[in-house]
Image (cartoon, rainbow, N blue to C red; front, top):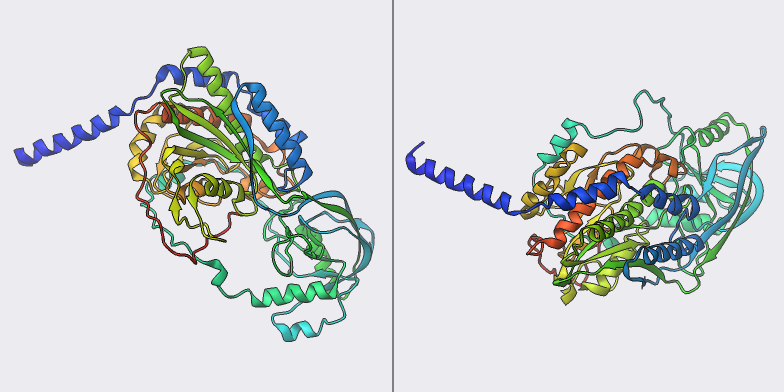
Length: 530
């Protein structure tokens, strides 16, 4: 190496080290945050109220209204400022299950493990099971007049294999290294899904089913066994099931072992007769829904805001614990930790800290996208592509989100924002002992940080241990308090509280990645239902 190259190398290393060192970490505040987040955690107490008492929290349901009232009162009691609800919508009608029971009576009696899909109407009756096998309209003609008073199967048999590996996992050094080495993501073009084809027969099929009026349509999800049933929402023949006046065929998801038993008997030529009793009601007469907002006021930079949040709504078969009572409890705990640390230290945040608990996430990020539409950008009808930005968009330094189950934080997704890497690396350094240190340029999707990223605001989701989220609890009847891991949630709340604090205290706003407004009147985004 020549002397000139050597000098240049030392200059570059020195510049990088200076940039790295400039991002200060307040060790004293981190010590207080650890004290209140790890030693004096209240996260499980909060999670218990959200899940055991106020679960499930289906968007539009009376239980979500009760949960919202509880959260609003709790945040006020804690001393947060500007606690209020912000409406979005219209969402449409809600739904609440009041009673459900299903059993087989032929060839013998046995209780069926099953759950109605949300927005299915009440139904009572007994009837035989028929398997509808149709690939086109000609095939449907053979079933004309034969489905009324019957239970209709759509799905074929699904092979169930025994588990030899644990369904729950944590990240290891190999998986974390793979994330850390991921290249900068390629931006995905916004796509107009309304123009894509391929759904015509599916629509024809559901119109045919609605006209034939069977007792119910039965299915089994593509995963789940040992009594774990993954369930979401019913579909309408046309439009959204939340629209007033929509006629919905009752739809029920069975445990795979029970579905398979019925299917195998039909293949043997053995008739199967089922009995169902379901009582459900539609709710939410004004069609509007609400996000929960609360703040810790800032000081010299109070007009600038650091946001942190999670979605508060859930599906209906469990109590919405890992999805996403965990995230909501953690983010409420972040607020509690910071208020306790501010009180003990006498320090106040420079920027305003704003907690948001979103609703309507499961149906398409409706709550966070509604908030973005109200505060940050103008959107064309039926579109999530911003056409212009509002002044408030410039005032949000960052948004932090948690929505991948109960697993501890192992790092953070940069969402392609390379300029923020050295900042996050510094902030994670004090939490190496808590096994958090991975930074990846990768994008991650499916939840509310996307509503912020879509309008040019730095929005982030944390890397979490997978646990049994995908295999057992996500959208299933097993999504209950018992599957929350206290140490992991306390760790997550502690690290996020530090991130929120340090974002609030910086001299500058967080770096933003390049962002351009797309002038495309026809562009529309994909839904957020994961």
